[in-house]
Length: 139
Length: 298
Image (cartoon, rainbow over all chains, first blue to last red; front, side):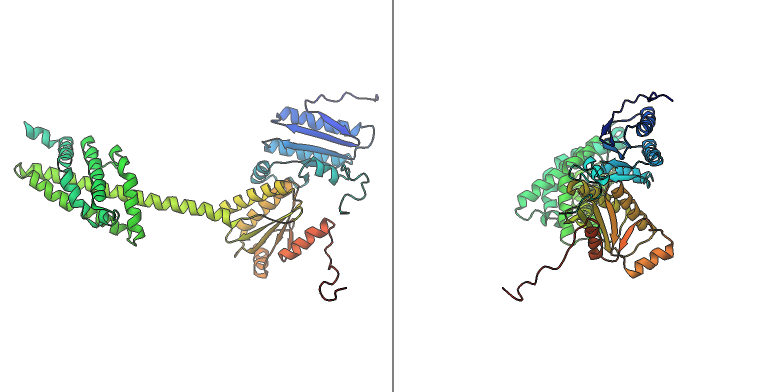
């Protein structure tokens, strides 16, 4: 295999912050785009120059999460786990959470956080906590 | 030739409307003495007469439109508010709805007397038809009064239900990043929905990491209530907060086990204090007894 295999193009940007990949979803996400994103994230994790310490998916801009997107999120997390990376879904809106629960999608395998800040500190990479060993709580 | 016109129901209704209009003053004077109007308009008799006139006008209007049995007839719309007020004041005075209906029916008698006098010289069949039409009209009036009083009661109940929902589900901030909902009373679908919504809002507002659901005040937990609890816990978890259910009394614990409900994925604690202690410990906050106070001043 050559050095850089062609990664599937995705309309959703995946930002690399150090060893954390940050994905921000905005508005409505089409099913095809979501599937592309899933592929794209797996490739990015596999071919990142340094081992990826975590993936943060910010869905605070998403107003509707249907069963498909819910499944995609769970699959992204499962993929990442197989590639030895943790995934945190951040910023879910209350209305979205209620809808998912009513749909029976409690997404048990998914790690969640209130916002990106919390997600990063959950991964031990918060702005204040340079050392991943002590996440917080020295106050 | 006139008989032909009289015989149609519409013609009779129109004639009745005309009669009500002509005798407006007399009818109003008689009605004003009836207990229904007298007790509502206590300030002055003129006011009661005015109110009676408004009702007579409405009846005449309905009669002219020929919709004697129609509760929704536009003529009633003008007096609906007034009738509702009257019915409400009678209810406050401790009258049952059937008693109020009886009082409304009492308004028929003086009108009938006047009607008889008015049509004394026309044929008995015609008089009969007019009396029947008036009776039907008064029956409709009674229905309208009942309807307004019932709908006023329903509005009150709906408003109180809403208030009860709001009052019964406060979300309390116990500590930085810890919120609690003390649940009191039976947990049905509507309430658990409100609890879930307000809890999730509070999690966002307070940036809470831990949410405590205290069910000390919930009398019974059946499979439905347990399902509501699990939904709330799952929703809070999706928001990135951890949920703790506290205040499970021994009897409730037994019920849950008997029903075979699996709360295995939910963190439970005996009391609110235990739940708070758990949340504090998880956040690395240590609460310790301070140096002795007051006992030995230095």
